[in-house]
Length: 280
Image (cartoon, rainbow, N blue to C red; front, side, top):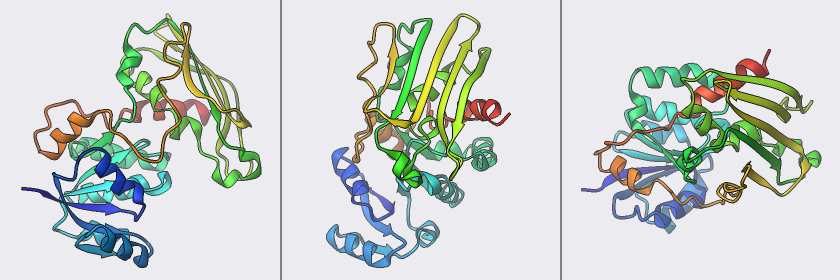
């Protein structure tokens, strides 16, 4: 029997995600929500979706929805994931799951109440490859791919929003002794977002990661670079439409036969770690 699916946002990418990953056979397209009811009505008509709503809250409250695709903007994504989980719905989302220190207490509530079993993180990359024969020294760099100087309102936090590979790696070593030395940091004056970071991370005293985050200079390169450059091309700039690398795990999640280790909140520990040193 197919499960009833709700889609937060009338963004066409959510529907293309379902087709791209072959999920059409597992879901009834039950409801779509947008803050503009005309948009959700149009999507509902074009894709034969049973219901449409003019607010996200209405979809959250619908008792007939089993699963929800939540690819909302990062600023509000976690808020609605939290509400959906509390409403006993299963959530499929993408990185980052959260991007604010205000979310931390609610993340801890979700984990402590085992609701994290009901949220699934789409992995766009093979994060686990980072753990294969990892060298003792890594140089990690992330640069802006847009000219944010002219439009600071569009500037993303490259550390929090665009560095899942780094956070996955640090989470792997969360039981080790990790030290972060901030060599230089800079925030934009308008939105107080991190625009530049030069840091040195040491792990158990014998592994080190040089981190360079630069959201000021327009450089078309986003990569993790090690001595051999073997990882250089593994982590491309994200596309609009998401292909799930962990597709088989996603199917297990949908079929309610989830026997794998769900690492949805691998962002949690590194996020707290960075915030402790960045906000000193």
